[in-house]
Length: 100
Image 1: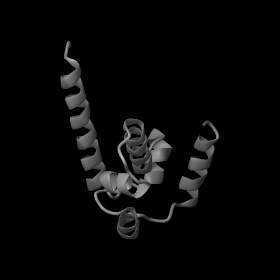
Image 2: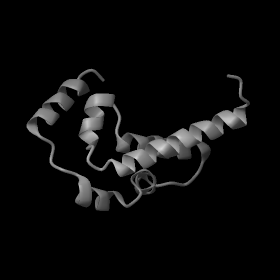
Image 3: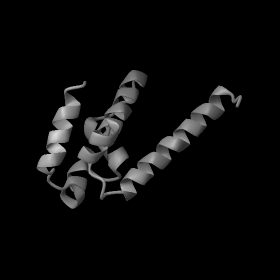
């Protein structure tokens, strides 16, 4: 499929927006589950957003990038949706972390 650069960027942006909206809707999926299965989570996405802003010289704080991804302040999301990780989740995370 041949597309011009502008169309490619617009498609990538649409996919990103859909992913973020999906993650906002799936509050039952914890970040540790995402990390254990995919090697990235909502916080990774927010960090990548901040990195991209920094690279373009766009002022953005870590809190602002997290709010973009979470759709609300991070502390609010944590209070509403974050659950304590189980021993099994933590063990899987530690094992996976050793590979990085």
